[in-house]
Image (cartoon, rainbow, N blue to C red; front, side, top):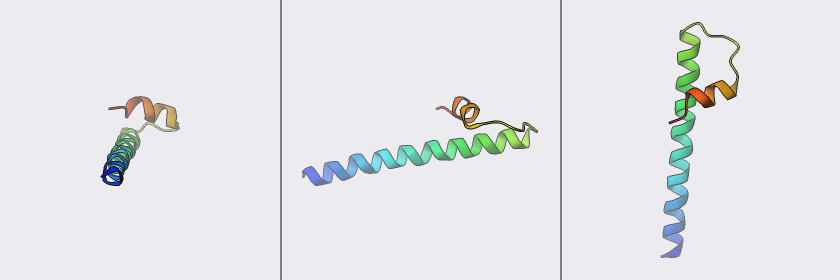
Amino acid sequence: QYEIEKLMKENEALKAEKALSQMRNETRSMLSESGVENFDDQIVDIIGKP
């Protein structure tokens, strides 16, 4: 039972991490398509926050 709960929590954490990564990638794409250049990860993190 404990192992199942542990794996479920880990799965949820990985899903959240994946979703955040996808949002960051989408933000980078949108910035590039808009002609914005030379942006760093801090900008992407600020704009791409849920």
